[in-house]
Image (cartoon, rainbow, N blue to C red; front, side, top):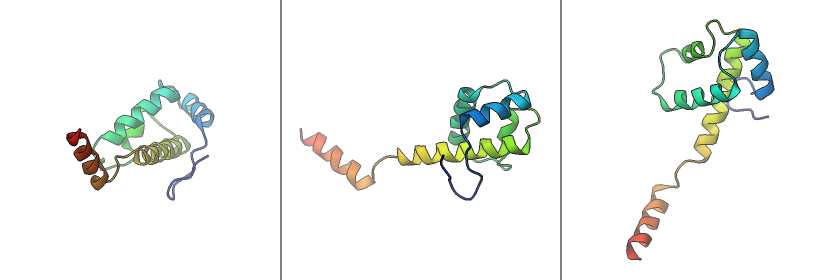
Length: 99
């Protein structure tokens, strides 16, 4: 399991699924992952936990902690796939233009 930053560790999809069931959430883990991708693409909210209300009307602290942990994991994965440095991209573009 991955630990990102100082928040709680993501305990995995099975643990998240149990918490979703306990909260009566209409989304499954795949739906939550899709939602988190949208949250990551949106501007930061004033209340960083507010988006969790989209998952369950009354999420438990444990569910909010796991949602935030998943968000951190997915953000780290996205950052790892980020674009190469500008100099490398410009060099690649120049090489393509010379072809």
